Image (cartoon, rainbow, N blue to C red):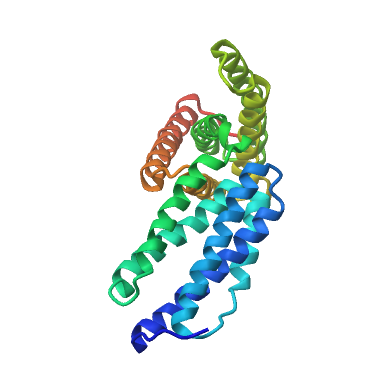
Length: 294
């Protein structure tokens, strides 16, 4: 293949682009292999072919073969298996968006094909929006409901119980009983709500997603009280766990649904920590007024 002439600076930049494209090509190809839905699989395979074409375009200018970043390929493949197709592919697409900026700023003047590649990259996003139909994302609202309620109610309850009881085992016991009971109540409410709305979602599955999200959050928040004896350390650890849950879930939703991470994260942290602070004060007041000494 005849190598086209570019400046040394642009060639260096293209080598980085080559690596990105061949890595994306291999990642998309591997992800496509375990997609059961034929429409989704063909869409991902089409993107994989286009990424290879982009790689070959850059190679015609650099005259050099580049190996993919296998660590990234493995990472995106694992993410697709365990966190869903939407999340992993959208995460890959975010890398492609950064590449578009690199194309326009660094090589637009020297490489005529770059405009076609930018057009293809724009089409990728449209394809991805229309192709994926994952059950987990359909019920994201139910997961949000479970997480939000558990975070707000349980962080508040644990903060209040911590100062009212000042005994980590008793706080853990009360927190688990309260939280697990509330998870069944919340799941039942979600079931009745979805059944009355008669929408596309299955009421049973909506209740299941809500309940599981709630119970997971309850266990994660109460865990410190089962392993540490100092109630203040437990409370601090629980609040950190709450922030971790909020951050991880909101990052997942922000990538999969192109939502604003900063706004959602700030809102949930403010509400959860605010309720915890108020409950903390209430627990201390109740202990003092009632003269409780456990």
